[in-house]
Length: 259
Ligand code: 48F
Image 1 (cartoon, rainbow, N blue to C red):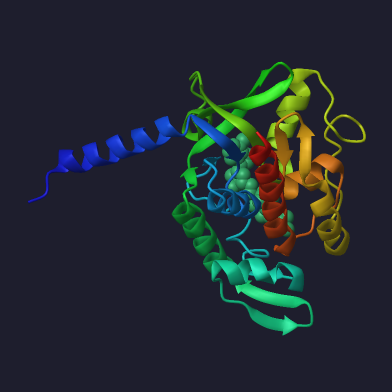
Image 2 (cartoon, rainbow, N blue to C red):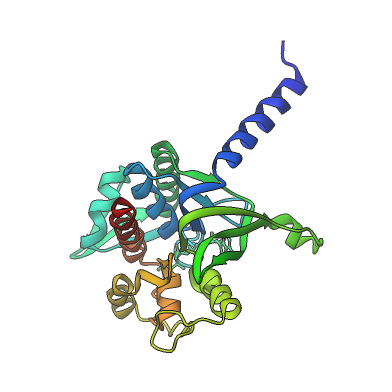
């Protein structure tokens, strides 16, 4: 026999428990695209308490769409070990070019991040940050549906030792910190420089350099890193996104272990 209300209680109790536990963590990642999920996977694997807030119903950002909805992605030689480690099937196209299904890659990445212990919440947007003593100390969250409906709903907050802006092209968290704190970001202009036109070779090259701390306790990875530092976009080559997520996880892991 199945009781409809028991089903409801099971969902509400378990979701409430998980989100309550997630209000204080080591790292909050804003954005569940490829770079954010990859960062979550590596941080969770290292045993850190990591929380991902993803705006949309379905995590994955630009990954499932591949290139112009042709649902394949390309990765280069140096990032293939990440897909191998995750267990994603790749095929060799030509020297330095490998292909993977964008859907398989997303499915595996999401599944592995959660299995390692990352807490991934969809349908929640990070709309602001907590800044105490000129340091980012967490984020302000709200249901995406409230914003879509244009409801005036006050948000809630989640605290963490560090925050990662993995919001993609829009670099939303960097923008909000720059606009509201009045302080300078650690960029050449002190502000978000803005993304440059498509150039895969250069975009992928500068992405790892751009993956770093940009304000006390605020890190940036993925396309947001190039947007913040004025790097080019790079289209449906995803190796850099994975390596950028891996790099930010390493930087955070080194930092959090020092505490
Ligand atoms: O855009 P997205 O996929 O960013 P990424 O991880 O990867 C970029 C590639 O997809 C592609 C590319 C490849 O070379 O250039 O564009 O850097 O994923 C960003 C995710 O963040 C969510 C958004 O819905 C998407 O899933 N997001 C954006 N703003 C917010 C957010 C926010 N304020 N709060 C929560 N999630």
